[in-house]
Image (cartoon, rainbow, N blue to C red):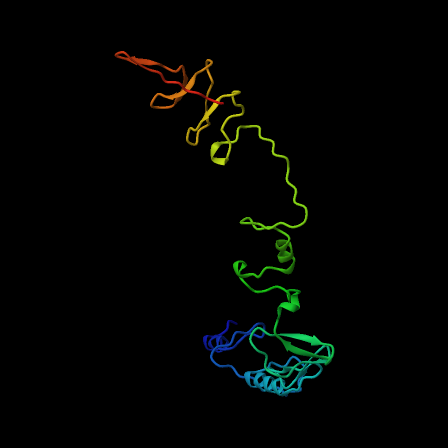
Length: 226
């Protein structure tokens, strides 16, 4: 016999026993807070459990109540109860047998002797100053003890601007003529009795010249030496 329409409509308003899906606001009985079975909890039950947990005291390294306890100890060692400053951290102080708030310093990382300065502002170290004190100034140095210098060995001619003559050799018995900052020039003695005369530009070795004018003999005698 088929299911009647009324019966089917009544069945459609029911939820199946297996994986039922309810609509609207379904309600269930509130279990006891001490329940430990498969009873379905409702929102009231969940809220009561949360309140109970929040009021529950903590132990060991924490003090206060959940959900916001205070860390009072670490590994059963007391922690500083004061409020830390910005960038501080907990550091174990053996002398006080406690964890204390600590601000990181240069000494903590082995930089206690390092100055926090720009390179240009760093002072001269004692070792550097001692090394400088053992050196001579470039300008007007004053030496002590026995001063030695390497033997001067010129492979090229010393220029005039540094006190030389600008050439590696000089003609024997020649006369030296200045030439500005260029190497000196030389004038060889020439023939016996020659004299130095100017040609308007430089000096040359030349033979003395005698001239006669209208019956008058003009003798030019030049005596060199003694």
